[in-house]
Image (cartoon, rainbow, N blue to C red; front, top):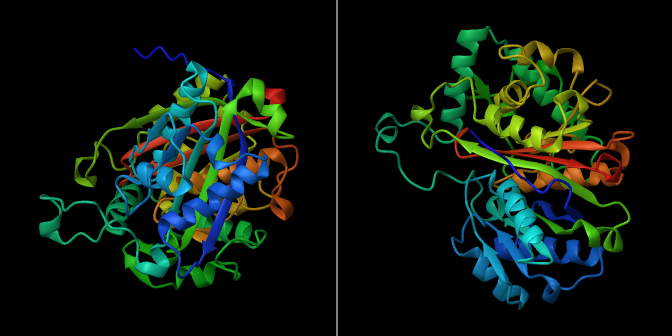
Length: 385
């Protein structure tokens, strides 16, 4: 039985930035990550040489921790390059908090960048071929998520219009975000008539293919208020995984978020009903429904009905993916760090037209692989400590 001793609220995010959102031709993934890192450090008056804990996972550089340190001209005490797909950055935040608590570093930088739209123009593919799935020509990753969506349809009677509610909500939030890559109006008729990619997922069920970078800076809580007007404290962090290949997933309708979410919320001492802002890794519309259920915001099988009527859109009762998410804001291969940036900006009160009034608690959830790795963070303002 797990016995978590997470250092609740003893580390805080003091800066969060994005860079090169949408299209950034002429820049490498590393250069984009550096751009976001310098922006984040500049927000709080720090320089690269102040960083002694470096956490990064670039899509095209397996030793990107070494490369980013070299590019920044620093010699960090900790260099962490863990790769679990889009959830990696939540695990980076977890390990950064533990390293800060133990004194192994004083300033932790978590960074990501990708030029996948400019360089490749397509989604980053699986890092290796599957000896079991390749023979059947499963298009990856969309085919894997289509399998999950099909099974969910079979078990719970999911309607395409309910998946459409997720896409429409994301687009409505994106229209409030000047940094979002796609801001054109999206209606249900347009969604239902969109080109099918892997039944039952159409092009409007799939994340964008963009460039982009993000970075956050973390320090110990006792230093946080010296650097940021309104620090965002890490209250809980947990990760879980049950499979690598989609054909090995124990249940296509249940993800390991049902393990990571309750642990992170227990560490934080909160429940789903306490969360003001929810940032979910929406690589595909089915993700949002599965994570709403597995994280405890509604019961299994009720995700489709839960999102009906604009419930997760602007003006709805639950603010989900307030930047527009991977579906309409940005998705440069791995999206996890962008959920952390948006959660931070919401809690700092810096989200502009999309700001959720009075937001004090946020949950950021990352997904890696093909519903494989799940990682959950609970973040809060000073009043939640």
